Length: 77
Image 1 (cartoon, rainbow, N blue to C red):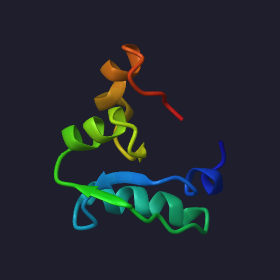
Image 2 (spheres, rainbow, N blue to C red):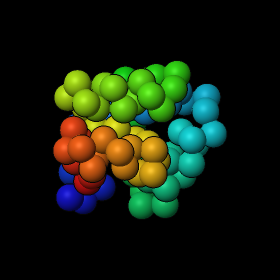
Image 3 (cartoon, one colour):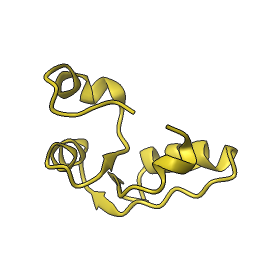
């Protein structure tokens, strides 16, 4: 899946005030794309829970989500 395709889905991530958001925002900007978080959360745990609830694609550390990826609750894209 390309970054352009990814941005067609609802994105769940930490607040735009967070360092994590700024890191992801910079990554997308390197490719000339604008990251827009559709559902902002206060914690990575909330990102995980909303992704498990099928509310969108999570913008979170793969290491943090690895346990639920291994359990088949979410899919890494």
